[in-house]
Length: 125
Image 1 (cartoon, helix red, strand yellow):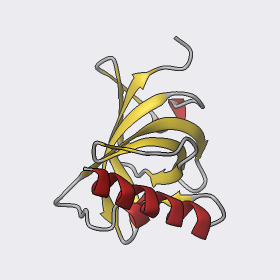
Image 2 (cartoon, one colour):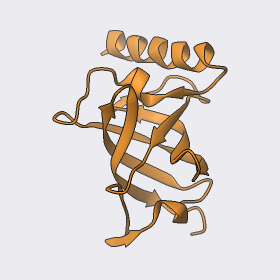
Image 3 (cartoon, rainbow, N blue to C red):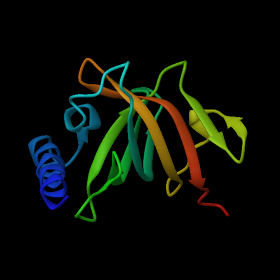
Image 4 (spheres, one colour):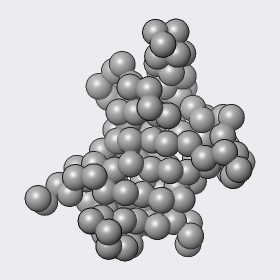
């Protein structure tokens, strides 16, 4: 388990350092495919509607806790991405900085694309 955490930490740091502090989670989750989804947990930092991306402060990847505090990554969304909060569907644009989310997604040509985003804690509540 420690080895897996160390590998995850190295991957997160490599992505963060290699791209000016922000990396695509597709880089971290290189093995997932559309057939094999992966899970990410984090806190929303920014939603960029032009790039159709969400910047996260990542706390877990595939149930492995990040060892650092400021591990940032980018997830992408498309027209099929669902946002769910308290069994209600929302738009991605309803996400706010500070919302805590769980994401199930897949690697699409090196980009981590969200299939389902579940808001676990709304920043306004």
